[in-house]
Image 1 (cartoon, rainbow, N blue to C red):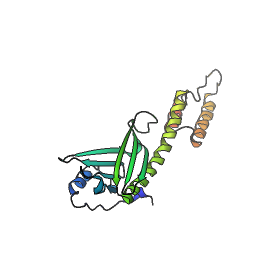
Image 2 (image 1 turned 180 degrees about the vertical axis):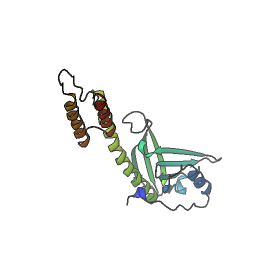
Image 3 (image 1 turned 30 degrees about the horizontal axis):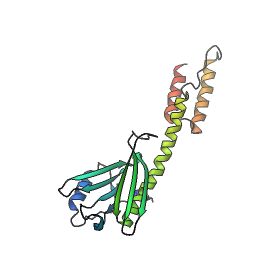
Image 4 (image 1 turned 120 degrees about the vertical axis):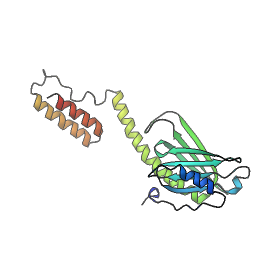
Length: 206
C-alpha cells in the first residue's frame, strides 16, 4: 500500500481548530485528507503558523494573517512539476514548482512556493506523497508530449490514406489498414482515441 492510499486521522491542535476547519471545508466530494504538516512555533513568532497538507487530489498549503483570514496555496497533483525538501536543524522546508497550464501541459509558466519550518517527520510524509504523484504525472506528460510531436509532424492523421486507383480491392485494403492500426495500438505507438478515430474513418470509406 502506497502512502497515497493511507488516510491520516487528523486531530486539530489547540489554537488551530479554525485553520483545520477551513482546510477541511476546501475538500471536494470524494477527496480525502491524507497528511498534514504544521509549522513549528519557532518559525511563526510574527505570524500565525503555516499548515501544509496532502489530499488524495492535491497539495494544499495555508497561512493565516494576524488579523484573520486564510491564504491558501492549491496545487493539483497533475500540475505538480517538482517537489523538494530540505531538512534543517529545527525544521524542514518544502519547495514546490507547479505548472499553470491545463492538465498534462508539457511546458509553459511555472510558479514556485516555499513553506518553511515544518515539522520534519510530517513534512517528509507529504514529500513522499508528492514524489509518487510527480513521477506518475511525469510519465503521463512524456506520453502526451510524444503524441503532440506526432501530431506536429503529420502524426497519425494520414495513416491508411490509400487511393482507389492504387488499391481497387477496397474491402481487402480496409482489412489490412485495420490490422496495421491495431498493431500500432498494441505497440503503444498510438492512443485509444487515435485508433478508434482511424477505425471509424476506414469503415466509413467502405
